[in-house]
Length: 391
Image (cartoon, rainbow, N blue to C red; front, side, top):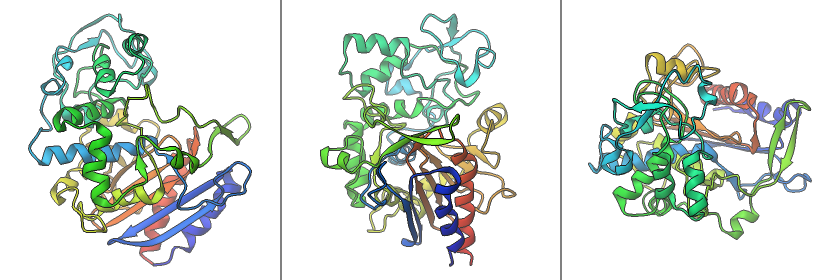
């Protein structure tokens, strides 16, 4: 193995794009075969990136949420094809907007609560939530949520998710793909099935078994003191501008726990989870969090036809969407194998899980709205990892 090309590329990202700091961990067969950081964790450039730095992981949370849901599926406490209303009764008798959501604005369209609609023919199922095919939006400012918060500003996860059910869906469940709040709904399902809060479930069934302490939905004061500076990319200036930290982890209320984007943590802590998935569900300490056959379900696509076309708009040409993760389906693009899966986050984090070669890759930066990170940096990091592994 020789990762000198990867190191050169990572070290060039500050000069090329202005990325202030980054950290990368590559594991294979329960060994860390590559670790490299660059840049600084503070705007003044006084503190070099370190393994203690905390990050908002945003949608990389989804991989962990899907792991939790898969635990309940393999335990027989739910099935992929269960209607969500089995666990959340308010999700029965959903409505769908009249007309085409694509013509109304597509991924940017958020219906109002009084949008003309009709009763859905299909029921929303667990698999629809996991695969982003439920017809939901990503609107955390919907009429129903605003109404709830006006009456109960400290509403919990279950209550906010119940409010979501009052909004009309974009399309018949199971027919199209739209990136949405489905994994937040899954968090509520996990609470009902387990009898634990979402954060307690993750701690008790994933983090503690793997020996993880620095991965949480509720960072304490000490952990917040370690939070890396976060930036927003400004295309008009081509620069990364430091922004304020509070309110960036999708906390609709102090008691709301987002299954789609609420986790914060260190690179090492998150890497420990995806390393376990890359090794048949077993962590470096020997703890099993999933059966190998459950992990392998993540290597298969769910989206086909129009739903696959929806997913591939703009990027992901070599990927489809599966059970809450992107899944590589085309070998012609990129050096990772078909079946490799993972996801990314709004501030540039990137997770890759390869259970065939027992490889995991975690790349983290802390920059919002830097879209070239997804289309250029992440694929380049992926390919240079595999080049390094094969040298």
